[in-house]
Length: 116
Image 1 (cartoon, rainbow, N blue to C red):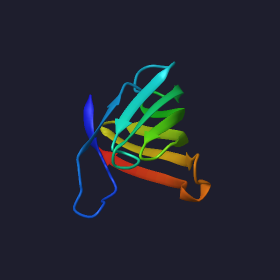
Image 2 (cartoon, helix red, strand yellow; image 1 turned 60 degrees about the vertical axis):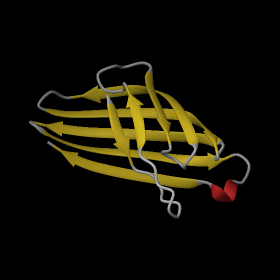
Image 3 (cartoon, rainbow, N blue to C red; image 1 turned 30 degrees about the vertical axis):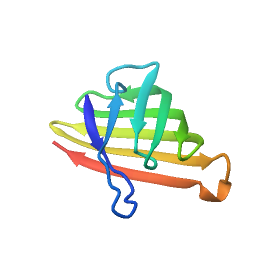
Image 4 (cartoon, rainbow, N blue to C red; image 1 turned 135 degrees about the vertical axis):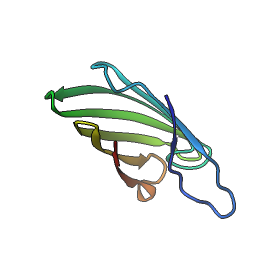
């Protein structure tokens, strides 16, 4: 499933980004690949472990660690949590990007969505 991902704007240069994810419905390993997500002209690859509980009220969590490469080089631990009830779901997608060449350029990215 391809879905648009948010990206930081850089002057007039703004591109759409796609993310390929197969995390939902599997337990190990979780895989995620992105381009232009953390920064323009930058890719990232993640691997992680899924855990979940519940039926009518379902909680799924995925702990991930990844590598970031391109205009930004670093490592990125992350956590994705989804709470689903009936036809509604709330999810968070959080990662801490640690820049290997300049630790002061590291950042925390937090995202949340509500869907139905």
